[in-house]
Image (cartoon, rainbow, N blue to C red; front, side):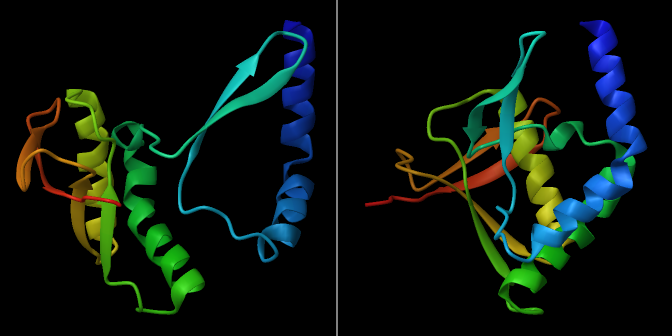
Length: 151
């Protein structure tokens, strides 16, 4: 199967401009989510999407180049979908039940990117037991969170 994967990869790379053009031709017709992640499984004979995540992780793993370009891309997305300069504040609702320091590292990185896009960001946990809390990320950074009771 390695030969097949290599061949497929080479075909994708060779046709990348055509693939990008195809996606671009549909971009205006589809309202893409702000961000999401998908778990993909490769059995060796087929590849399938098995899960879509509403709370994706990994913002803490973005390479320095992409991290630098992320805030302007966030701003571009918001301006394009909601009007130039209309979005100034953002409520980031996180998972409810986690003290995982690496999850909070991801959230701290996402908050940093969003603030870099000139957004005022408030982080909330649904049904937090207290009004406010401070979560500690793996690096020692902290994330201030508030309760967001959702009925």
